[in-house]
Structure formats: structure tokens, C-alpha cells
Length: 106
Image: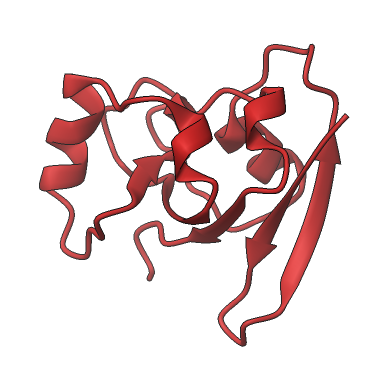
């Protein structure tokens, strides 16, 4: 099992525990956990409505693809640690990571 955290606007952190061997993306886990992630394109890195900021654990994510970087560059509020949750696969490297949901509304 992998445990990572979602940081809320007030600074509190909520842990999410998920099996690492199911082939899920962070976006799928966030949607299943009922977080406000639109994910309009369904995980194809075409809409950036699953924008997250990586607060801790960026090194374990690997490099973003050119397609992902292009979408992030078009966001009104990107950060140096912005990623698209649809492009982040659940793996043991995410254990202990902290994300903040940015999406369209943030």
C-alpha cells in the first residue's frame, strides 16, 4: 500500500492509502475519493483540469512528458512543481508525497 496526502486550503492534510499494483493514476484515485477534480479529458493530458501542485515528493514522480508540460504552460496559475494528476501513476515512489489540488477553480 502507498500512502500520500492531500493538503487542503486550510493547511490540514488528509492521508489517502491505495494499492500500488492496480495501475491507477493519481487523478483516478482523487476522483474515486470524491475530491473536486474535473478531469474533463479523462486522463489524456488535454485539459489540465486535474492540475495538482506537488508539495513534497516531487523526486519520486519522474519527469513530465512534453504533452504534460505544454498543458501546464497554458495554465493561468502554474507553479514550479505543477503536474497533471492524470499523468502521475500510483507507485511506491509516491509514498509520503503531498499534493494540493489546484484544478480549474484554484
